[in-house]
Image (cartoon, rainbow, N blue to C red; front, side, top):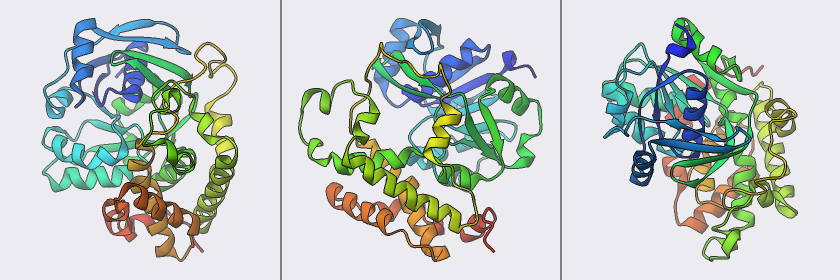
Length: 354
């Protein structure tokens, strides 16, 4: 199968999903269906006839078919299903779409966080779905936002991403066509390490905690305006980020695996020419609730639980979970991806401890 013949479905058409959909069309693929629970996106796309884009990816527009009524309808007839909702929504989406998936389809989590394909696959199987061929990316393709429901703006585009899944699922023309369409994707068999090396939480959670005073105030651009994400990592918050990264890397090393430092991630993902310098100076709110509703249950909670299982201490990660639980009045440990959910046997299959 040639990449130009790929039929792709998109579940989630926020900034991440829109960017990937735009690249799919620009590279010759076809969008066979899409769905997003935000009806404003469907209405805006229907009015415009598609998505407009600008920024580092250039300026233009793509056509889109009308939004599907639900996720099951969206994936019908697709060769690849790209899942671009936040990771904390993976379980609900897997349950909803399970009856519609086929064994021939590829399902790609964009991105997976820790154990994304394990959680998604288990729920699909528990709800009568076919044994899907699941993959997960270690991050999203763009650093981007939306200035309207149908207008995508990219500040940077990654030139490298890691994609992980079972080696037997890499056989076949659909997988080869996807990798041809997205040469940025580099395959790795270690699904657990893929999620642990996702750098998002290193910036997200310290930024949320360090700027907690902003959450209940409207300070214009500080909370609602167009700001660059890295502004949240300035000053003392960045010291916390560095400490969190060091603890994560110690956990990964303790599992007998190799951590990917954020500097090395940036070097691979963002070579010269991949970031927009000037022009769009800022985008996205400085602090978002997503920084904890996604990152705590899908990154910090599993890291703490994995550390406890293997006898590796994670005091800072545990402290951040405790703090955010207090701030939000939510016990994120109750519904997080812990060892019981991921299974000790699955985790141990990826570790290289002596």
